[in-house]
Length: 348
Image 1 (cartoon, rainbow, N blue to C red):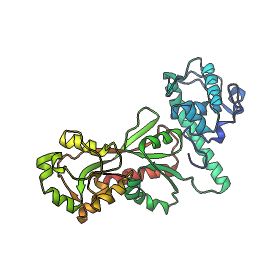
Image 2 (spheres, rainbow, N blue to C red):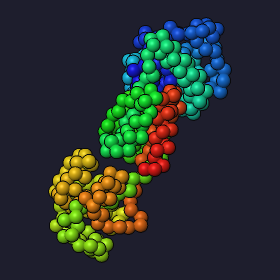
Image 3 (cartoon, helix red, strand yellow):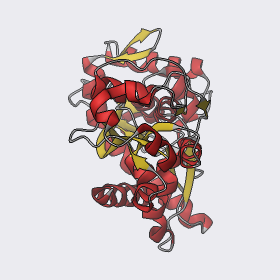
Image 4 (tube, rainbow, N blue to C red):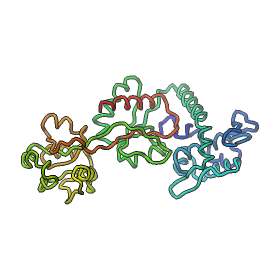
């Protein structure tokens, strides 16, 4: 979430109401649809004065997928979130969420209500952000972007660098896809570059690029193995060659072995280092062989510092996604980052 307070609910945390704004008519609502509230009778079947705090809380739960995440996002206690949702359900006369151990599953009426109120609440959030920014004389809030370190260092940040001169501010978080997607859903990030496609409706993913995996080693090891031996003998040609990986579970190697050789890799890694850039450095220095994304080792392959041990027409690939919260208010700079990455990725 950006320092300006904009959240996945499409409103500022400040605007979500204090903990005292619980189940009943809270601070934001007034009878008859006065400025503090809203009157409705639309697709979701709501009538009378609506409590904006409750609607904001409802939308936060809908977008984050859990009462706990919504509470954290809005700066409320979880009991307050529960009370506000129950009050809205009583007014509606129908349940909005099914409480599950893994979160909150929206009902059909919740889907309908979210579709009806998301745009107006996001518009209010945008006005609020602009008003507070103008009043304080501040610059645009930073875009909180997250993804894998090696991809950001080589491709993402160089692509975004020209935008910084146009006023873009960035806050970068690096890590594994699962934890970054959880942070995105909870409102900690605006956009995530992810090696896995998220499930569910809370997050929306679009393909950004395909990373191709290649089997590589330093020239000395390639010479010892022999030209064409991997193509002829498969994994047996690599017997005795130390394997360098970023995890004991050999996830990239295992995927490559299954796709290319049709078998699981045997044995263990000689070197395990949880950073693909360090894996690249170790392999280039002669530590052994590894499977790496082509974009990461392209320069070394072109310079001859690494040798591709097997040329195949259908190398295994993994799709990288650009992910954001479904229906979330998108400030101009966030939209600018998204469009720039999608454009730049065409050449990646």
